[in-house]
Image (cartoon, rainbow, N blue to C red; front, top):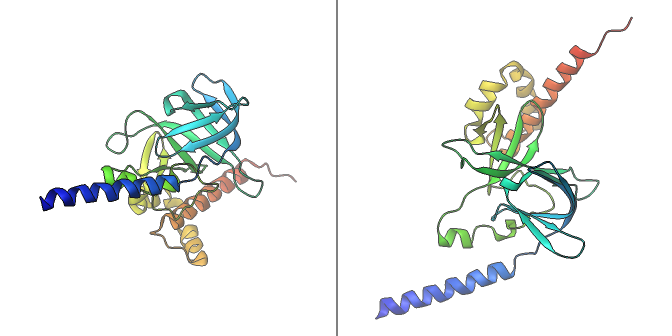
Length: 223
């Protein structure tokens, strides 16, 4: 009898906690942007991305809201303000043994020779889903590279290279030609190479070095 009462009490507390969590969650922070459908058609309007549902919302002028999944969209994006970088989300096929084989949305965090994308970590179980950072249901104005709720990947030749194996699969395997410059960059900026923020900064610096080298090769010498 005591066990039944305890279970009832736990269920009640869990339901109340869940309602409080979602009641305190903010609504969609709409941003003016664009959306490119799978057939290539481009739509413009107010957008927001729901990370948990992996669905992008489009609010039309008459107030109606349409929802699109990754199978219906090539990419979408917006720029919250002139002082913030543009946000870009793309639909990519998951990599076997790492992510689902079906299309999924990823946010592009760095572009260049090494493209970095991120996706919200998958949650499992009733309690984990209810209490897994509900403010991330709808997208914040700016991405936070310190955020532990996301998995980061280098997307290279159709494969996802996880930041969990950054040093072996990305740093040593892909950046060998610039290790001296990158080591100096890390020391000068006092970066933590094991943090997602530090690793992202390293990739951004690598992309700049490669693009700078490529531009110098292509630039003709004038006499």
